[in-house]
Length: 324
Image (cartoon, rainbow, N blue to C red; front, side, top):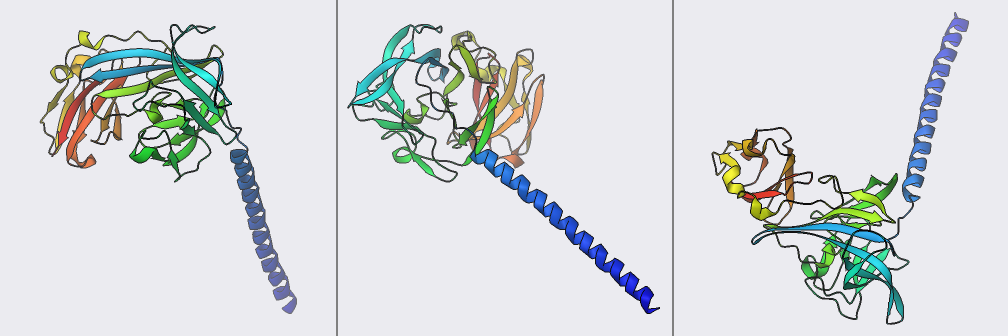
């Protein structure tokens, strides 16, 4: 009998030993996975800012007054300020290499700390003189503040990084810095345009957007709302006022309302975005092939909002909407 209990006891001990061993093995693999993941993230190759053969294609939209304009920046050649070498930045006359340069927009350079500087640039809200200012800083982490320009974007030019993730571009992952109102991508710049960080971005009926980034005659980044780097957009003057074609009822919105999109249902519009009075996007709804969408007051704080309807190569439509 004692021998029997001894054998059972041995089996129990062996079972717990095996279970513990399995847990230790599992823990070991988890630690290895975490180590590999951290090494991969930390070892993610930094993509430097271009110093030649680069084109940023952008679009400016205004509804007050009515205006739409596409334009391109490009880097061509070098210059020297204060014994420091910069790449020359121009507005372009065309979109092919070699670049046919137009208006000179200043010098741009990157230092060994992943900071991009600009100098002698008057094509921004606050012209830059012979003292360089920071245009981008890709050395920072989540929660850090980034100082750009002199009186540029935000209070005293400060931006706070809300999130950093990675985005697959041209077959490689690049860091993407989210500031709430705009995003920066390593080696490209802001999705609101190359000079966005040092250009005042008024809220309301004006927008700047990066359409695409082209380097060495290859499209590296293309805004998903477009299918070409150099779209021919319909002049806004040729379109009906948005308030006459987009119907909201009942309005102001107190509970549940309908947004009638029948007038644009046959167009290529894909999304309707909602912005608060600070210009922050608070929601996006897919409207592809929809003639009506339902919207609820429960999802929004009371107040005035701006909505923006967009799609590939389509002139964005904007209007005001009130939640009571």
